[in-house]
Image 1 (cartoon, helix red, strand yellow):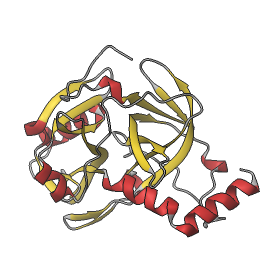
Image 2 (cartoon, one colour):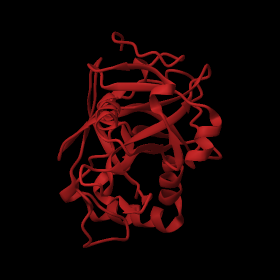
Image 3 (spheres, rainbow, N blue to C red):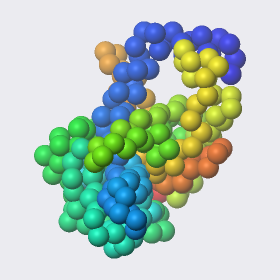
Image 4 (cartoon, rainbow, N blue to C red):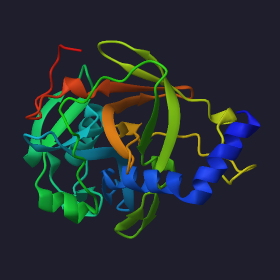
Length: 252
């Protein structure tokens, strides 16, 4: 990254702009995690993904990747001492399931507002549903809770949040493809420090565009992460989810 861009990012970090964007993004989602006793009777966290909460104007829903939900179901069937949480809220996700699609790797849930509050999160309210489709070269934020950073203590856990700004490199009816260049990524005010490169656990996390307003800037969701590699992040369009939470297998 050019030095002038690094300096600009550092200024935005010192001014509090970037921290506020990160804080806002984090409030709109939560770790989807489960824990219990393994085959040796030892307590551990089995796995985690990310779930985000939004109000489509018709329904308050939670969205994650279907492979996260599938892993949860498999572990629940295997282990006898077992508990699942959205953030700080203990839940049985199957009670709230609206729809799921293995091909699109999406799962949706009917989320009571009290559950969002108990999770320690807030609800995203897009001005319309679906939001305007993302465009190639548009700069977006993607975020979530990487599993490698989590810390377990008894039945409590800490889930550090990571968010990245990057460019959309391609858009198709099925996919949003984001470029990730971690070796050359600038971490504001942390020159010389190594950014966590293991992003597993962000599956199900949101992709936001930043909408600049006259008085205030806001985030607007455009996609949901379903696959992460060392150089690419793949996401599904919000238009794949109807306002009532049903998953649309066809569309754009």
